[in-house]
Length: 434
Image (cartoon, rainbow, N blue to C red):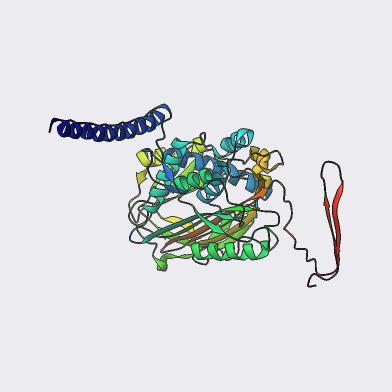
């Protein structure tokens, strides 16, 4: 009996030790993970290209950055043709280039950061970008439609690093699409254009030409669509023609919208009027330079910030009927390849063979194209706008589309020692079916 009891106690102790050992092993494993997390905090978790957790962040700093970038692009674009209408979307252009920036390294990243006015890439930037994307989605409401789409287009077999797809998913909510970029670039351009046209409700039916993607392995696209009603629509009965002096000094007749009860301010050499949209989450600021100013608008981000701050805090509410606001009814459309312009602003290294986009892929070389298109229509009811940006990244070893060679007639085979050149096998294939 005592021997049976002792044996039972020994069996119990062994079982207890096995259980304890299993628990200890689990605790050690968990503690190891905990120590790793403590040593290298990962506040932004990304799993399979989908953002899971994010730092609390405000998108306002990115709004400031995108405004400064947009004004610099507008100024440079205007200097190319000071008599032309220009419309662009700083948000769309900054998003397309921002996705490329997340894959840039070294001097390439520093140059892009300076031009885009962005901080160093990392968890904090991804959190800010995520907050900006969320804020844009929240603009939707009665009478206001804001829709965006970001996508990384890849050639089959040229998948970007998972760390990169995770970063663009976390920051931009970007998805991955596949297109035959290297094997059939014209077909890939049509496929991307179809997606852009759908995202912009048909307002931008063609962003890429049939030959624009030659030698491109990745395309980063952003599309934006806006349809917003004014908080107080302009009466159609009050729309009437009036004189307008163009940038070239000629006087033409334009259709003017007329209305009142808008906030306005004069500051920094500009008169600004705020035109709110329905719901109060969006507003258009119309900026008129002081009389006598000509050429391209010399409006810096700092000056604009001062004007808008004065408008928000000291803008006078003009009683309806006392002052008439006359705003031209316009329908604008622009489309341009902006590579040279961006290089002139300081991003040249990103377009050179010395660019470093290894954060996107080990075989990513440089930016091969930046195409941007935008439309903006301002009328009695409100504003309809669309924009699209495509940033193409070329691979390091491929500068032209892949070609297909068919061995469909007699050919030779040679097997050699690559070190010595010794021919191990040599053959002529005259009829492979024999």
